[in-house]
Amino acid sequence: MINLKEEANLKRLIKIGSIIIGILVIIILSGSVYFNATYPKAVPVPEVKVEMTAERIERGKYLVNNVALCLDCHSTRDFSKYSGPIKPGTEGMGGEVFGKELGLPGTIPVKNITPAALGEWTDGEIIRAITSGINKHGEALFPVMPYTNYHNISEEDLYSIVAYIRTLKPIKNEVGEKELDFPLNYIVKTLPLDSYKPHKAPEKSDMKAYGKYLVTIASCNDCHTKSEDGEPIAGFELAGGAEINLPIGIIRSANLTPDVETGLGAWTKEQFIQRFKSMATDQVKNMEVQQGSFNTIMPWTMYGGMTEEDLGAIYEYLHSLKPVKNMVVKFTPAKTKM
Image (tube, rainbow, N blue to C red; front, top):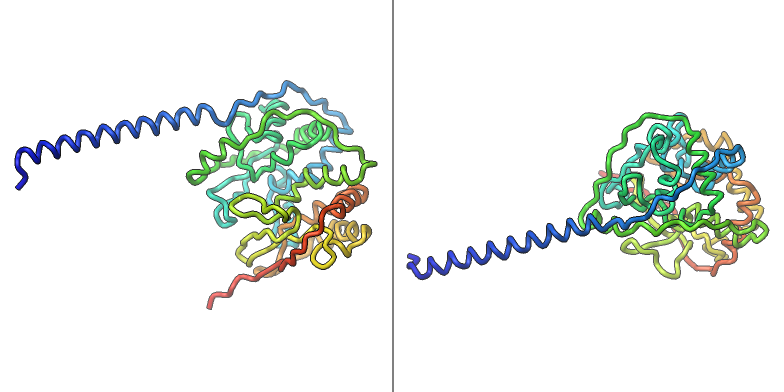
């Protein structure tokens, strides 16, 4: 039996415990309110109106389709065909979902970037989203959108991308919101970058510098560098080996450093360019892939549309890198269930 003194002590402990829990709840809620009010940090919307010239629209078309590859993610790709070319009629409509099957901590639907969705966005709001990772409503974008790379796009190329996106066929397609696991749902709010500072691209005559520029805005590093706990492994920049788990098995990215045995060291510039250009043919774009067989997520058919001059600049830059010996097994088939 509990005597009166023990009962009083028990009630006192319960009261003290309740007060402590209440204080902790208030602290947590206050911290959450403060955090959500503070992040993402305020990045002003650039006051700019992009002039829609024919030259800009043409340049933007090239960048969006063949270099920065905005339409690679913001359209539907047909993986019944080699390299997953874009399904005609889906250009820019979004709707694909990156989820836990790709190792991501939640579900991230790809947004609609046609005028049907961006019609009420200002050019400045689009620029802020592309270069800082903050949408029209002040919300942080998940960095599967490579705004850290796009932060390096030249002002003129950025304006060209905006101009071209404005010309896409409007497609009504409501896309859901991202749902991220804790604690990433908080961490992602701290990731957006500061305001974009306008700058020029390197001169094309400086092939290595211009090649580095193209490699950066093409986000080659994102797929061709191994990472650990979400961070690139130092010393393995562009050395391949990054793994992507798919139902058909594990696909690994190629080593792009000039190592002779495991990378591009034995490739000539002509071979490098021809490799890409051969992927832009109608024959490749229509090449059927049997279900369960190897296919690549590398958007060859889009990158294959780059000019030989730009591909040559990329080659020059890649061959200026430190060779990294890293033998990559490009595909490990999934184990067949018995």
